[in-house]
Image (cartoon, chains in turn orange, cyan):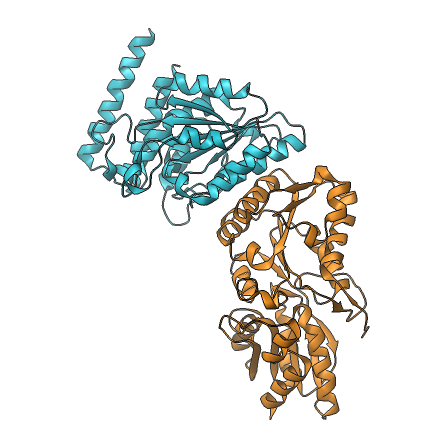
Amino acid sequence: MDTIKRDPRKEFGKAVAELAETDERIVVLSADSGGSAGFKDFAEQHPEKYYEFGIMEQGITGIAAGLATTGKIPVFCAIAPFVTCRPYEMFRNDLGYMKQNVKIVGRNAGFTYSDLGATHHSLEDYAIMRMVPGAVVLAPQDVGEIRSAVKAMMDYNGPVYMRIGNGAIPDLKKEAAFIIGKGEILREGNDLTILSTGSITGEVLCAAALLEDQGISVMVIGLPTVSPIDCEIIKYAAEKTGRIMTVEEHYICGGLGGSVAEVIAQSCPVPLKIHGVPHVYATSGSYEELLRYYKLDAKGIAAVAKDFIA
Amino acid sequence: MDLRMKACDIRTDIVEIIHRAGTGHIGGDLSVTDILVDLYYKQMNVAPDKAADRERDRFVLSKGHSVEALYAVLADRGFFPKEDLLTYAQPGSKYIGHPNNKVNGIEMNTGSLGHGLSVGVGMALAGRMDKKKYRVYVVLGDGEMEEGSVWEAVTAGGHYKLDNLTAFVDRNRLQISGPTEEIMTQDKQEDRWAAFGWNVLSIPGNDIEAVDDAVELAKHIKNKPTVIIANTTKGCGVSFMENQVGWHHRVPTDQEYEQAIQELAQRRMQYAQDSE
């Protein structure tokens, strides 16, 4: 694993800007949020493809739908709860119901706005966004994957929600083509499978290394597509290790764990541990403190895993 | 044909559709009819075989509950066979109680209020970006103006000076629970929109000539979107439904149906005599 960490927002903005150079259909919409989404240079270079609307997430989601009816690909990125919870019905009716080709990106998701409190945390986005029929929900795990996922999201014709984190995240793997709906084995193991998504996968891989030191062999599978979930790889993991744990920077209900539980219960019943944030308005603190507090740092994840297989 | 007569025919179709299916928002259908007739029979560049034409004018029925009026107009204009409406509101039919784009001629799925004007702003913005000549028309209800999200769209439309966008407020002064002014004050609609930078026209909205004049005028206004406050009568054209809050979503009995059809036929005959 590379120890250099990079800002996912900047890489996201850069990836969109690169594609927009050659794809005339891409239009970036801002809710007073474009600069923080990495679009500062893009806005200056391409004012004709960049529209500022101020703080009106409901309006922008509808406007995006209107733009998409004419063949444009609007990209709307802002703080995660403000593009998911706030305009949820616009996502459901104006985008999902009509399969509009709009890309909604929630940045600073999970706990990344840690000290700003529960209004700014995004711990239910996987759950609510995957409830919209036909919507694709992505949570790339490192910046290389953000870049390839941005490309895949633009190539896909339909509504997509992508979650990206804040701060700096480590590179976990070589950049490769992103296939929507496919998971990937990031580490082989025999005693337990941990399924992970989003930038917390970095902690999961560290946890797996800690567990290895204690004689526990863990397979780690990254599922950067939360919906549609990769059923095949889940079944494979159930068969191979007989026990599954999910880890997510999200509530323990309705998200990755819930999604995996739906598959396991119906297709390959094995013991399952869903690990994430308890279903409460979370406390605040620094990002690292919150991960420790909710046992989502490498040590915490390893401890929960050890208890599970004991 | 005199468009007033066409409006009588459409109203007759609406009453029939709702009576037959046993469901529908009849009051608002009848208040918005003249706006739809002017747009679909005179003003808009739309046609059944051009439903995907990039140059076509766009229409969004943001007050989606008036879908029966839209179905009646689209069927009569040949977007789909009239017989299709026999399945209206039945399981499996695409002709459901609010607009959806599986139906030929319908641009936008609506139903929950406060969505359509934002979509219209997006369509208008795209038209400007692509240097298209098409115009965008959005019809809102006056009760719908209570939705905060409408004002996000009003703000954006004014800010971007979208002169290819025309909104209507079907100002029939009633909503499901009672008069709009009792539910939540809606007065000074004209001042409200003007404050956001819109060109405002206030007209008698069941006078089809007045509707047509306003739509025509809006086409020539530059650097501002236009809103037409259409002062209408809920239930317009059927005496016992007019201005009656109970007819928001009531279904006529067989006797009421007969009377409504008769009244509309009489009115049509009067217009026919007028135009001779």
